Structure formats: C-alpha cells, structure tokens
Image 1 (cartoon, helix red, strand yellow):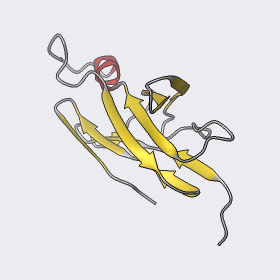
Image 2 (cartoon, one colour):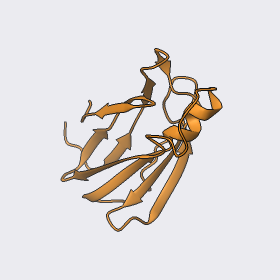
Image 3 (cartoon, one colour):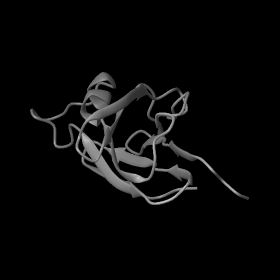
Length: 116
C-alpha cells in the first residue's frame, strides 16, 4: 500500500485497575517541547480524533501522559509529589505511514512500544 500521509495514534491501559484509562490528558509536543495538540482519552483509553496536526512531517515528537492527575481522579492515594506525575514518551517518526504509541501504566511503572 502506498501511503502518502503521516498519522499518530495512542491508547492508554491502566494496568493497576485492569481497564482502559478513561479521561487522561495527553499532550503532543514537538522536538523542542512546544505543545502541538492536547486531547483526553475516551472510555476505551483512546483518542476520538487524530492528535498529529495536519501537514506534520517526520521528526522527533513527544507524547506527555498526565498519569498523576488520572490516578488522583480514580481515588488512588499517591505520594506528594507522585512518583509518576507525567510520563513523557519521546520518539522519532522517520517516514510516512501510521505510528501507534500505546502506554501501559500504573502509579509506579509504565511501558510503551511502537504498536501497529
């Protein structure tokens, strides 16, 4: 398939509660840390619309996941400051096509990978 576009998606799974992380704020930043977009996850832990602005090209980006605020809203007792307040995931997009960057998170750990 010849893809002439660049897209980015994400989803967040709350591994502490065994469910999608609904209501988590996610910020997309460029390689210099400037905010490009913000969105909040839906009941499936996904975003309702693409977060990458139209016309964005290959480069370095970061997704900043606001996990501390999410777990606080869930009623989880966190330290002050929380061990994981924000989780920045910095990654490079080298070509055209679809990039998927999921996050599996608990109050004390996380993992991510390039999904499909």
